[in-house]
Image (cartoon, rainbow, N blue to C red; front, side):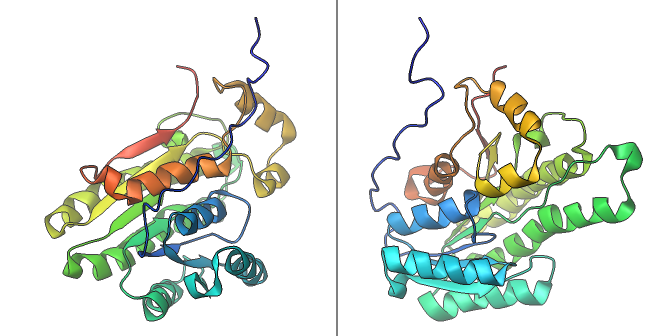
Amino acid sequence: MVDPERGRPPVPPPAHGLLRGRTALVTAAAGTGIGGAAARRLLAEGARVLVSDAHERRLAECERALAAEFGADRVAAAPCDVTDEDQVRAAFDAAEARFGPLEVAVNNAGLGGTAPLARMEDAEWSRVLDVTLTGTMRCTRAALRRMCPRGRGTVVNNASVLGWRAQPGQAHYAAAKAGVMALTRCAAMEAAPHGVRVNAVAPSLAMHENLAKSAPEEMLEELAGREAFGRPAEPWEVANVIVFLASGYASYMTGEVVPVSSQRA
């Protein structure tokens, strides 16, 4: 018998105050994707959150919406292009100036695209690597420079199952996400003596409005068909794992890359 509930997302679970009173920063948070869902879930769990994004109009809209839902005293925003070191520093400084010492950094910014390697231009390769891998390095570095001297804090990077698995047309993105995984593991070993944890999530397919606009419908349907639940993840389902890694429930986890995936073996 076919389960009539298969393919339907569950109801989001209630919050439990896992991050009450903590200061957090989320990059690429002004949208319907994982970054926006992570910011909302961090706020629901009690954190004070600075959202950052390169899209200033969407960022302002995001700040207003979150402030209306969670209170203006717990939400701030700062524009940030993660390919610009000065903007990265300014965003992290803004979070601490508004809410105090940073305790959670969610490095979500990334850039994808589809291009066969044989036809890929150097500029296309470099752009994806600069945003997705080097941008994550800049943000991880900024977080560790603040957290390590204080002896506390958590970093959660957004990788992808494509860091492990092959998919045509994704050489640049897959290489960048594999690099995020390696960066996470190395940073974790450097940060551990200071009491700071660094982990990553590796989603398979999380459906949201921007992805639906930027990827062919046939490809998304084919990828969703590989998922054991017969559907893509909801962004909040990935955000739940991000919150877990940022919380005290993951106190012994560092250098780990946690798949958020229902793909069949």
